Image (cartoon, rainbow, N blue to C red):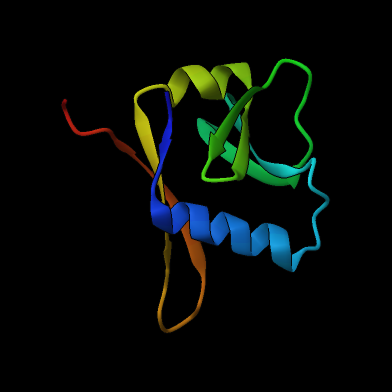
Length: 95
């Protein structure tokens, strides 16, 4: 199952609170097979999404993203100079 770092939880919470996002919304991650990438959006879950709750922050993963991210960790880093937010996906450390 996808794990979420404390940094990512904080940044996602900041995004949802800054956007006055209703409680039923969260960060949706969807796979874009044509582009070989993931897309992120603040929205409601689709019917078949996997819902991940990380310290009260909700992530919605489409089926392909859930499979792809099953053994990954989502992190977030904010550039101190530009303030730009970037999400990164890494492998989970071995147990």
